[in-house]
Length: 354
Image (cartoon, rainbow, N blue to C red):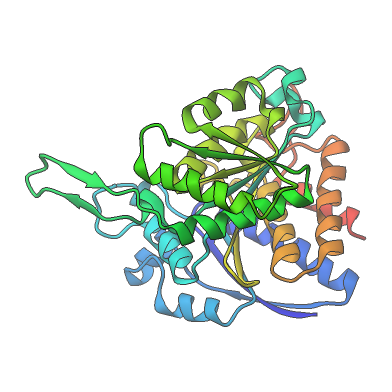
């Protein structure tokens, strides 16, 4: 297979972890006889500094010609003023909206070897394997917003249409059908009109999936259940802001934000793949960042955009083998243990792909 992948290393540790994921993708190409070409472009704070735009036109044009995008991380203290007219996260939102990437998949899997890093008792983490399906291009993040010039009031509108809910719900139902057949839809239907529309639409879609067991869970209750009994969930469907918050909360189940990948998908095969962690500028350049989330994002790229299931499985198995061998980066090292560097962990993954 031939594939063109645009890389957006971004800011902070982004370039470091993307470089490790590219090492893995190159090994996959070598082992399985593929030809992957990579086109590095700017996005985020680095792009603001260079051209004053967090998503330059050249970057967008390159992505339009690619099969997939692999993103590192954007932002940092230098660009953290929320009142600034140009901010790194604007580039990310524009990228998602431009390609209509309405479904964000965020798997949260607990590795038994790392259970001691989570704040929950190990027995509560047994069997935890959750897939968040987050709506990504609507809701309060994209609704009408306004702030009075005198600063006396402001509002953000959580807006959804039936079609927007229907299409992301179908992604979640299809995923549930391939997993355990269980889906929990998260809303706040007891308060918000937009969430009553959400619940009605999910129920309508459910009629097409009689083999999937559906439950509705209020978002505040879900936040509690994720800490008290996370193994009860399999596929979690949530609107944009709720999915963002809950999946970040659930990251503690895996022991570190550095463990969790994501895929942002639309109606076709094109997707944007990125770790859910931030740019971590405090450790940038030190060679200690955890590359697992970005490597696993590359595995999702192989699966969802290139339809290379065997290759994706091989990468995931190699990561699991590296963890099982006892290799730990600084964020997941046991007390008194010796962490391995970013590149040293990837070396072990590459060994697993020989």
